[in-house]
Image (tube, rainbow, N blue to C red; front, side):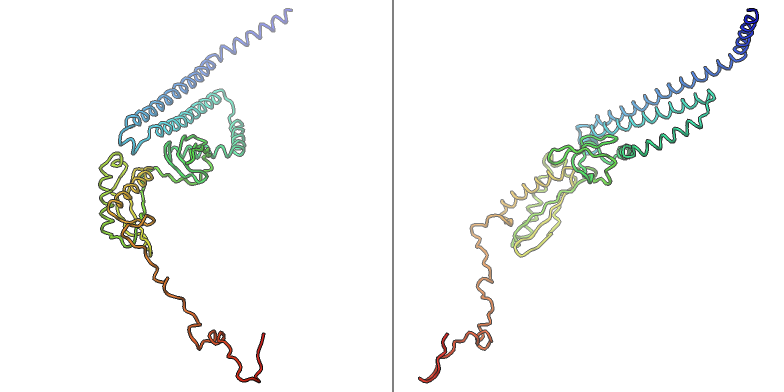
Length: 345
């Protein structure tokens, strides 16, 4: 028993001496780890709040012009909101990953843990996940760049190759489109190889009018110019028209008709409504001016055109008595005299 007591006393003394010799180091290490965690948490909170305020400012700027002429031309509030929220979500996630990941590595380094095998294992796992989920990674990266570059947004009418329609929702992995017949298309961002945005910049309204070749070009131009002037002064066409309605001239001249081309620069996505209104007004103006449109009813005093070739017979070889065809059809003369042989069938 005395020996055991001495051994226990010696162990306690050694432990007390070890703690006395190293408590300062342990305290310093603990404070260092605590300081790393506190700084990382504070930095993450500040960055996330800053990004949230920035996104909120962008949304308030979009709402301020919503409903105005500028808002209709340049900004779509829902599009700006979704784009800003998607960008904010990506930035917040990236910031959190970088800050917390760096803090974790600093804590492990402070504990004198060898980070080489850990980083190597993480690299191998990252490569394996990258190969296994390469389509998901491709969709995500494509969505991030599409949003950052503002290739399209909510309300835009786009042609994505695999589908076309109006953009309903833009996500980091999937873009939702509504087709012309009302169907919803879910298109993976990684499958979109090219995008045709029909709602950016400006659009062109093109109208082709077929009239009779006998009509006066001066009257046609005057009627269309009168339609253009009246349309440019009325609401809402005064905002949808971004330029004057121009008569480009004759696009095609045929025997029975000629085509007059009319064009106008319009607000993005409003070219179809402008085309329909132009056709309506041009038809009414032509009816008032008595200008005939191909395919319409002929006027009361207008005689139907007679084909000049209808009274001309086709040339025939039988018209020439000396031709082989005429000789072949000449009847055989009857035999002369009572003793001549008679040819019968």
